[in-house]
Image (cartoon, rainbow, N blue to C red; front, side, top):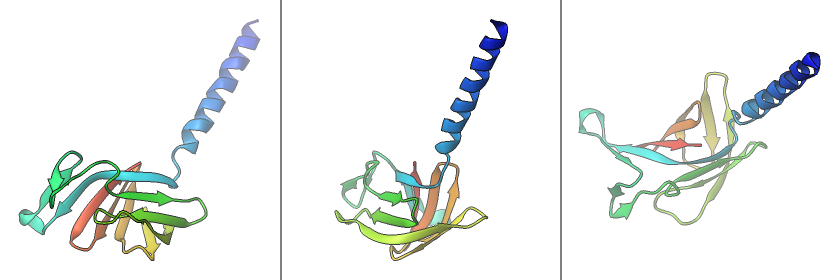
Length: 125
């Protein structure tokens, strides 16, 4: 009976580990967390719930969807439509995008930070 209990606990631990690792992939939907506008000491950071240029910032205000096949869609703050592009993660945590205007993108855990014009934006999975 003791061996059966140990075996069941071991199998359960392996299953839980597999599910937890599956959630760590890059692909998925990233939603707005914050944006910083300006340069150096003259910059201002806006977070969910704050207002920027007359619009209340919500989690869905800016959205990035990374698909496993290397394609992506991006909805920016000033648009109701999504644009499509491609993405590729490098070994150093940087992500290269093409077709959607995102530059200097890096991933740290479940967050992606990138430049979009004069704004630095952070999205969270």
